[in-house]
Image 1 (spheres, rainbow, N blue to C red):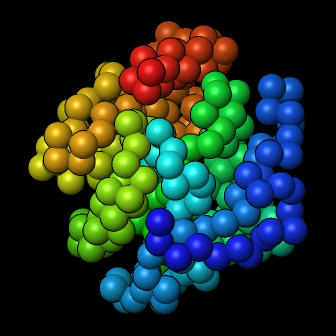
Image 2 (cartoon, rainbow, N blue to C red; image 1 turned 90 degrees about the vertical axis):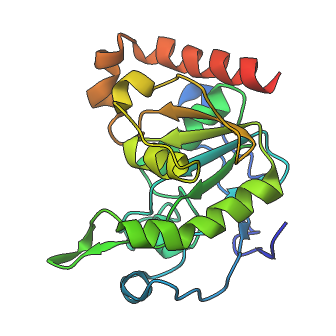
Length: 233
């Protein structure tokens, strides 16, 4: 695995298992991050707007890699769940980070590897505390980091959270996304990447869109678990 950084070794055990995830408590907090290119400055606008590069975290032998689009601004005044822009660790925000990690623990995949397609916070020029969508050039430039992670971890499944993360993974296959909602929980074999892509709702928008899929929250989690079990078994 690429170089690791034990920046929070004092929090919990080595694997971060410190919560009762079935009761909605705190999910496991990552104790390591996997640094691919320290101080990467390939994208000048991103390098200027970020606080930290939000590197991937988790088990280097994970069967499931969770991919988001890019870190949000985060909250520098929060507890350690400040967000990847401040912690340097993907999916460590109070809302989406804790939620997706709790979800994966509940369905038996708490040892997943978590990362983003774009590693740096893309600030909106009109409001530096609000994110914009990464540009196509930024997605393309950062994609080599994601490809390195997928090659190194070698998962069975990429769980893409949201439309933009799904589009970014498909772009590595020279494929386009047609209708995100219809693609949720529909496995797509990615031959170039050597994985199966499974799109899911972004945790920040799950409550808004879950009804469109015809699921209640518990049934949605069960569907994620069944899909992952079938693809990793």
